[in-house]
Image (cartoon, rainbow, N blue to C red; front, side, top):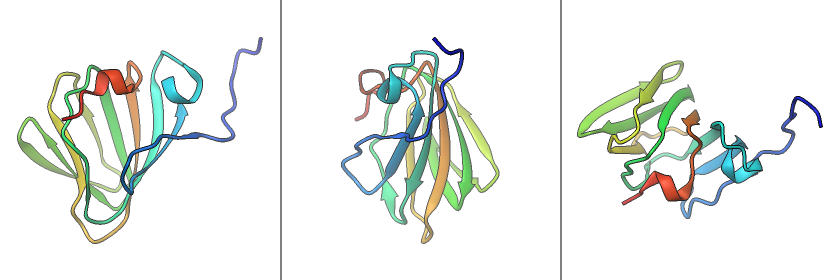
Length: 119
């Protein structure tokens, strides 16, 4: 067995909306339980339900900007900025702006549908 894994084709995670999630490492792509790393694309005027996950989530915006509501406080995260949201916080991601956005997410432990607790 090799001591590395080169990801050449991330797994597309179904969202039920226009957001794209490409998981490079994690539960969905390879049953990896250390963390999950995903690239996201959010179209203009996109939003998703609030959630209260059982994992810490680090996000870094690489294109455009995102609105993130954490425990009732609204934050705008711009290109090159990052945010850590601790597990158990109520969080809602959206892109209410008129431009496409892209961001990366790292979840510890990894994202899963059973631990995200979406409303």
